[in-house]
Image (cartoon, rainbow, N blue to C red):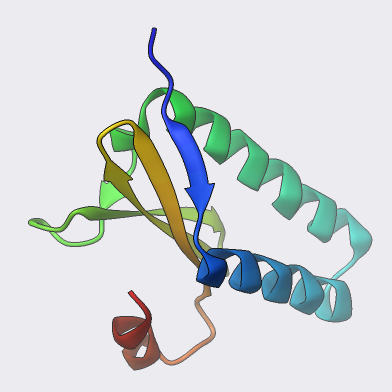
Length: 101
């Protein structure tokens, strides 16, 4: 079985850390750990079958998956690579999302 290589864009790295910081401030350590574990689980799925999750738009090359109710991961598939694009907090203005990905 071929595995997809997972790479993370600079924006994904920044937004991942920002979301962890937010969870640390507003929630408990338990929620932070659950978020990190959930991201790890989803990345494990993406390595094997990145088409598992919903396309962002019907004709889009990017996909989205809800990590927790408040945070969505956007990613795209390029041949044998999955690029993590952004960890999006759903509390933000959705118009801002259009400019980021």
